[in-house]
Amino acid sequence: MMSFVTAIVTYNMVKFQSGFSRILYACLDLLFSIAVVESCMMVVASLVPNFMMGIIVGAGFIGIMMMTAGFFRLLPDLPKLFWRYPVSYINSMSWALQGAYKNDMIGMVFDGPYEGGEPKVAGEFILTTMLGISLQHSKWWDLGVVVAILICYRLLFFAILKFKERATPLFRKLYALQHLNNRPSFRKTSSFPSKRHQPVCSLSSQEGLNSPLH
Image 1 (cartoon, rainbow, N blue to C red):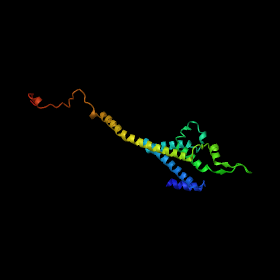
Image 2 (cartoon, rainbow, N blue to C red; image 1 turned 45 degrees about the horizontal axis):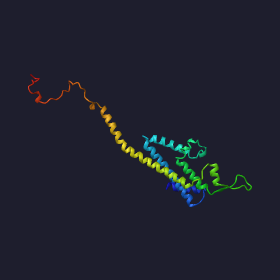
Image 3 (tube, rainbow, N blue to C red; image 1 turned 30 degrees about the vertical axis):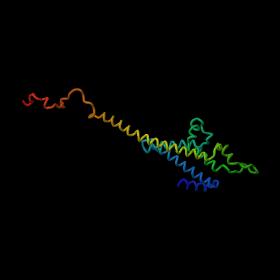
């Protein structure tokens, strides 16, 4: 509900292209983007030991995703090693931003840079030349990739929980055994007899012996 209200209000305030399909795409794009971030933080929270470490790791990871999404630097300008391939391709923000650009720019026509009968500039030309966004696939493909990344995060979170559910009892058992073996009461007795603790003998084995009182 929050994503739908925010997308509708923002879409009308900035006067994007009208149309039900375009507004619906903006709402779904924002909804799945928020869901991906939440799923990412769930995965981080399941791996770190405390709350503060989760905030630090999660904020750093989201910062890296924002830097490679195209907000601060266009995708063609990113260093190809590691940042472009493969980080920008597994980054949901990159696909969501490309879909948002296509949702509004495709079909629009802008005035030329100079007055006096200059030709119009199409939105597709701006996408390909200025923003470096490929038009070989549609905006719905970009949204589908965001959904696929969301599903991967959910499955990863489920796998981590199942692994911890099965591995935690084993680790606790090993820790308990190691802790008990280190306690003095569980150590093996020495082979030398103690003067304070004599072995207990039965009465039948003591028959015929003199009493220590005589």
